[in-house]
Figure 1 (cartoon, one colour):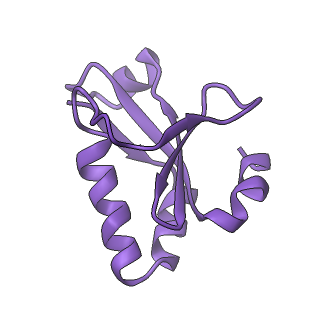
Figure 2 (cartoon, rainbow, N blue to C red):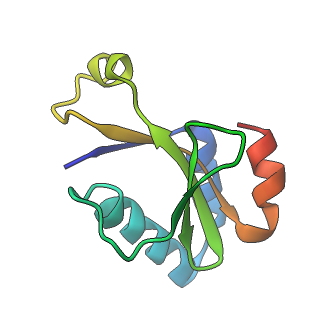
Length: 102
């Protein structure tokens, strides 16, 4: 199982999302990113020119995340060996603008 941490910007992004979209995103964060091994039917792609950031498609929204480093996991006193930091949760139309802020 993987650990999922939310950056403060991602927390603010989630507060702006309402209804079924929020439910789908929370489900993806809880079940898709934490699954080991990850499901084969998810839409994850690396962000071009922004390694190690990845993009997870959840309906009309995009979850921008990256793997946590060993040092970050140790600082969090995590029991898990691996994890992800979610940097942003944005509408698909705002993807390019959000990528520049990473």
